[in-house]
Amino acid sequence: MKRSTFLFLSMLYSVLVCAQQPPNIVFIYADDLGYGDLGCYGAIKIKTPCIDALAKNGLRFTNAHSSSATCTPSRYSLLTGQYAWRKAGTGIAAGNAALIIPAGTPTLSAMLQKAGYQTAVVGKWHLGLGAAGGPDWNHEVKPGPPELGFNYSYIIAATGDRVPCVFVENHHVVNLDPNDPIRVSYQSPTGSEPTGKQNPELLTVQPSHGHDQAIVNGISRIGYMTGGKAALWKDENIADTLTGKAIAFMSQNKNHPFFLYLATHDVHVPRAPHPRFAGKSGLGVRGDVILQLDDCVGRISKALDSLGLTDNTIIIFSSDNGPVVDDGYQDEAVVKLNGHKPAGVLKGGKYSAFEAGTRVPLLVQWKGKINAGNTSAALFSQVDMFASLAALTRQALTNDEAPDSFNALDVLLGRSAKEREYLVEHADVLSVIKGKWKYIEPGNEPAYNKNTSIQLGNAPQPQLYDISRDLREQHNLASVYPTIVKTLSLLLHDIRQESVTRH
Image 1 (spheres, rainbow, N blue to C red):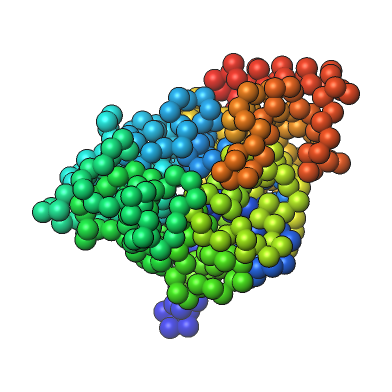
Image 2: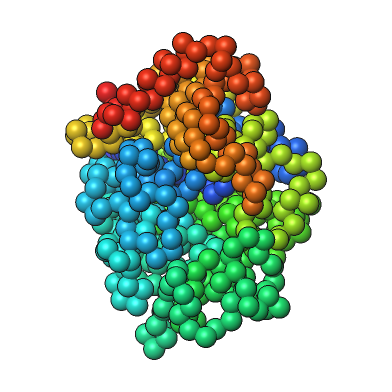
């Protein structure tokens, strides 16, 4: 065979193999990033060119929602395809909580494993670890992500402001010295080491509410911790560490399909940007870590390019809930906003039943498959990622998988504008959106969070908003349209009663 013919056939074979190989999936999940925090969503005080490039090269959603206004339940719903409010114990998890999702539960990652994907979670986990009673940090930390369908995991157990401040790789704390065991408690001190409350002179940033217990890297945290000195992370290096692990996983698995769930720490507190970004945004440390997040996204995109994987990789970018500015530290994030509006035009924020609680950025890029530069106003929920990616990979779901997850693949890829019939939002109370109407059920919790300065959307009477005309939720129309209130109240009641809403 002539060399030219051989080379042609080899190239043709490679093209056919690539055409048959399912797309890689990279899901980048930012933390506490608001609807108005990005240039592609209207921010003018801060530049986010790398994230904006995803919008330029793909599809930008204007009515996409996390399933909850806080982190743990959003992550639970994303991975299980089930509303977190159906299951007790899915509130914001402590740093030493046991695994919230029972080992062996059908998950998004396990489904993709069955489809032949190598799967990884890198970054913030916040779904508990270990058996009942919590994890044993000094031996095998299990069950955890490996028992839920992840081939590889390199995680922050909970949040950056909660102890233990260590990374866990697969089943083990990274760099742990067995002669310096970790002790963690959320009830009482585990030793005689200083705390933020008793020794504020040791802190680089003072707490504004709570966050005054164990001190790590000059920052006081929630919870008490002693030991594990060699394993402690450096806050300013977290973003680089996680991005490096993510890129390494993609490189190691470039020859077969992979699913990467990269859950960033940014822009959650404590905000400790790397020196490359410190002071660069002009908006204080919160702005600086948005720049850091943008850099992370850019490095992931460049790595895919260098590996020759961009054309066969779907990149999905979103956030776990809406924004919060002061969430426990006097880091000047509020006073240095400089006119920047993290929630954009929306009302509320993290923890809130109003739109800024769950309406979040959602960008989807698949070069050559999704038309570049388009915008979708379709109603979309992150709980639908499970069924949608199952459809993408041609996986049939069993009755016990993803009970609240709808197949919205055509919407996700910009092929259809047909949206969900309704969408449930979860904060202290539940809300339901159907068409132009949003109904918030009555609740007795405070209407205003005095610590975060966020309107929570709780009220003793029902609320009804025409969000097609009143996106800021200024005019409660419940008394004007009692029939609609009753209809949506009954719909929410029926959803609560059903254990499976997927059809």
